[in-house]
Amino acid sequence: MTLFSVIIPTLNEQSIIGQCIDGVRKLGPDVEIIVADSGSTDSTTEIARGRGAKVISSSPGRGGQMNAGAAVAGGDILVFLHADTFLPEGAFARLAAFFRDPQTEIGVFHLKFDSRHWLLKLLERLSGVRPYWFRFGDSSITVRRTVFMELGGFPDQPLFEDLEFLRKANRKTRVILFPLYVTTSARRFTHTGICRQTFRNILLTLHYLAGAAPKGLSLAYERTSDRASKCFLMMMVRYPEPGKVKSRLASGVGEKSAAKIYRFCAESLFGAAAALPDAIARYLYCAEASDCGRISSWAGGRFESLAQPEGDLAVRLTAGFDMAFAKSAAMVVIIASDIPDLRPRHIKTAFAALEEKDVVLGPSPDGGFYLIGLKRSSPFLFKNIAWSSSSVLAQMQGNIRAAGLSVEILPELLDIDTLEDWIMWKAGRDGNNRQPEIGDTFGHDYAAA
Image 1: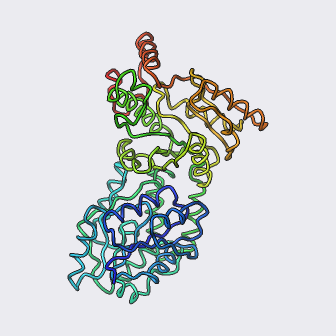
Image 2: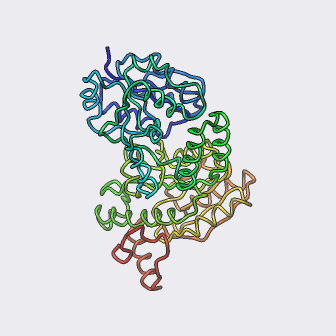
Image 3: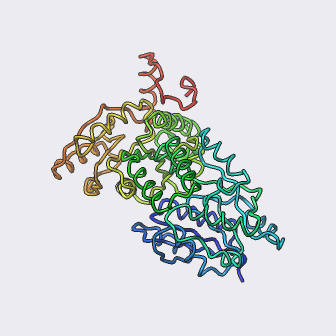
């Protein structure tokens, strides 16, 4: 019999389910992986099957999904893992050692977020406190299958099924706090606003512990979630590895210098994005799925990550808009990461323009665009475009006119693609003696770039 079964509840997790499964498989090649899906309309189930996971369908509700996964699991020990949570190195070997002790029946991990915001650091500390009400499903509840069945599984309730399960387990046995850390995404917090999400969670938890009905709390949770951001910023970004970024620039300055210049430009974007109000949800739209983790760390853990699909720019832009609108976005702006003069005001102006217009474009001097914003998915706009040519912007405007859409054109900004672009930008900066604004450096030495 398989020792471990990892059960992952999902709903529209195409952007991260592949990374989650790959992470588990790397740590335990023989571990059984079960994805319990509750009706995803994206590619979640296809991605999971493609990576060898067992995929089952379940009725909506995380508790029911995890129960359905446990019902078909073949492992002695069940590990319930959220799709945006990653186990630590050596997790299965360490867990096997803990469960060799027959007294170990159930446990949870310490929690670590992929953001270093001070409030999330406080929540990390609270996850290590003994009382069960500081522990939730994102701490990866791990339990013997026999004990899980004895406890009756997770309760059939729309909220706090994890807390209630641990409360029930705590009455039967000792819930171990493993000296291991899982890393979970702060995406819910960055989407809604870190302070707002934290205090909302605390308030709902206190109401639940005081006896409030889970259904009523779930309705309150959904109402406040509906008031979350409807403005999505997608930052197209690569990890600044020499030889893998800015090939045309590298031909003039060398691969290491090109990577350094690109890092400077991208960090300017990160700083501009960080200075935006919480009402704008911000995402790193990573060129390579395998780089999402280190790009998130590079950006300070402030933004959620989504992976671009393979294909040309039309495919990547279309997918980016589709992902955002699938998350109930009302307005989406996708922006390049090689614009050193980008400021928070440019991004705010783009969203303001979308209040009145169907499309917003930020042109660059080379005939392309550094920014595009839409209010609905419009893949036809990206048809018959000669990408990487000087006619990109003109062809895009032609598609917009043909579709009968209105458009707002933002101020032109220089993108750094070649040595000539870099020299031009440096000359303009030095000649104008311009002063850095919020978002210029993201902790980077502006003058040293």
